[in-house]
Image (cartoon, rainbow, N blue to C red):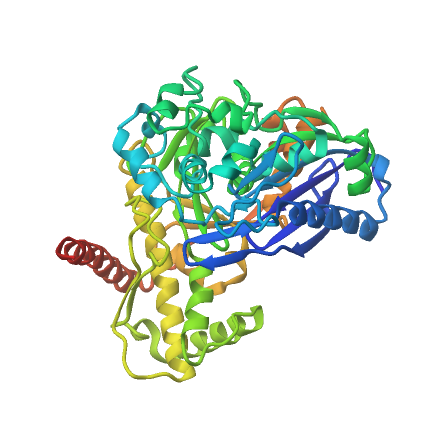
Length: 528
C-alpha cells in the first residue's frame, strides 16, 4: 500500500460515503452507511448531526479496514455535504430544530421548505445580495432557515451559539476549527465573494438577523476550498481510525465536489469552459458551470467567485427533485410499491421492451412537468407544482412503466430548460458531465444526450464526488502546487456519449409541449 493516501467523504440526503484514494486519484476502497431523515410533514425534514458524524466515522474505518491501509499513511481528508443547517450551543451540544422540541433533531435538511415565507421576504428586499443568487432567495438556502428558526423556535435561537452548514460542521468535528468554507458561505449564506464586499450586515438587519454573528459564530472571512484547516484532533482521529498527522481540507456543498472533479481538470484549456457543465444528479439535480468571467443568469444561483476553484466564477441551477421524483412515482402508482434499486431496474427493463415495440410513440400523449417540489431553476419558484397530462384509468404495471418513462423525459427536458437559460449569456454549453446516481439509470443517461442534443461525458472514476474531496484533501496535505494542479493530476479520464438524434423531432415536439405546459400552469395559478 502506497503512502500519501487521501480520504474523501460525501454526506448526501440518505447516506454518508467515504472513499480511500492514492495520490494519483485511484479509488482503493469505498463504503456507504445510511443516515436517518425525519419527515413530520411535506415541508419539514430533519437530520441528527451526531448520527451523521457517527456514520462518517463508521464509513472511514470501513474503507481503511477493507483496503488494509495503514492509518498513518492517510495525510489528508475533506468533507462535502448537503447544504443542511446544523445548530449547536456554546458547548457544542445539539439544539433542536423541531417544532415539537425533540432534542435529537438538530439539523434542517437542505430540501426542507418550511421557510418559504421567509425566502419570499428576502426576495422582496431587493438587496444586492440577490444578484448572486439569480435574483430570488430559495428556501433551500440557510438565511431563510435562520429567520424561521428565530421566529418559530425562539428558545432554540437563544441557545444557539454555533450554526454550521453541514460540511463545515464535519470539519469542525474533525479539527475543532470554527473556520468555514468559502463555498458554503458564498453559495448558501449570502457572503459576497469576488468583489471584496464580504458580509452585507445591512441585509441581515433588514430581515431581522442583526444578531446572526452572535448566534452562528460565522467568521469574518471564509477559507478557500481545499484550504488547510489543520490536523485532526486526537478525539476525531480516534473516532475516524486515523492519526493526528492527517490534515483536513475545507469542504464544499456536495454538488460542488462533483463539479470540482469534473470541471477542475478543464482549467488546462480555460477558453473551452463555457461549453461544459457538470450535472450532479441523484435525489435532486444540480447543473454547475465554471468560467473565468462573471456571467449572471436570472433564476440560476450565482455567479460566485472561487467556490469551486480560485480565479473562476461558478453558477448553479438545478431540480429540487429528480431521483426523488422517480421514487415518488413508483410509490404513488398502484402497481409501484417500494422504490428499491431492483424495482427501478424491473421498470427500466420493461420500458426498454416497450420502446422496442412502440419506438418514439411510447406514451407520446403523456407529459410530465417535474416540479413536484418547486422549480429551483430557471423559474426560481419554490411554490411551483408538478403537472401530469394524459392519464387514463389504466393501473397495471405497463401503465406505471409508461409514466416512469415520460417522467424521465420530463426531467431531461427540465435540464434542457435550464441550459437554454444559461446559454442566453456567454455560455454555449454542448457537453454535460454527468455524475451521481443517475449514471446507473440508462433511460436518464440516454435522455440527457438525446433530449438536450448535448454530448454526455461520464467519468471513469467510480465516484467523482468522493474524488473531488480527495483532491481537496490533497491540497490541504500539500501534495500538489495548488488545488487546480491536484484536479489535473488526479483526473481519471472519462467516456463520451454523443447523441444519435434519431428521435430529434419527437423530443423537439415534447419540449414545445413542455414550455406550453409551463405557460398554462402560470395561467391557472393566476386564476387561483
